[in-house]
Length: 247
Image (cartoon, rainbow, N blue to C red; front, side, top):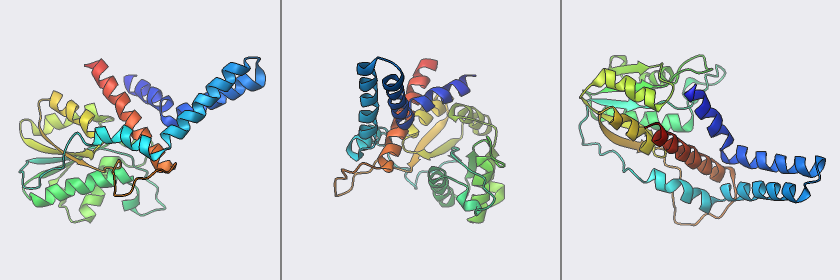
């Protein structure tokens, strides 16, 4: 029940969902009631939020503090296991298997493979449940890793965990006191690392998929990429709050 409630709350607090909901509520008040001032105010707030969340400078500053909390994994550090956390997967049989993984999932797997390939004695743990897909994220990870040269004997699949907390519990049962590198998106790392440390795991962060980057030129555009950054930031802030309330 908690898993479903978390998803519902997160959906309605996402930038696009929240902004559009406010705009629609305001318009309904304008069209069907006499509360014209209230309708105008609510719609205006929705439009303003949509503009702010879609503006690169705002979106980058929302997400960047989360992504920059942990530095990249130092490849010379030895670990016994490399854990790749689950992400979005769409098992569309009309496209190649390597396209089933989302951009963030692909980045997580590539980081895990980078570390595992540098340490041939390590094991690769891939996680992620199936949801409404025909295969799990863990299976998609495994298929992709094998196609890139990873030996099947080195791969351990966790197909049942639905969220990060369940992944941490499942990993603890497998690796015990052994050391591990945790590969996940940079924005997800602070929350993920907390869950794994709560299980007293010997974990080192291996963040990847940084999207709130600052180049040489300042980007002042309004676009969907900015909206994605805002969505990731708000999703993680909600997740951190939920984590704090639970523990």
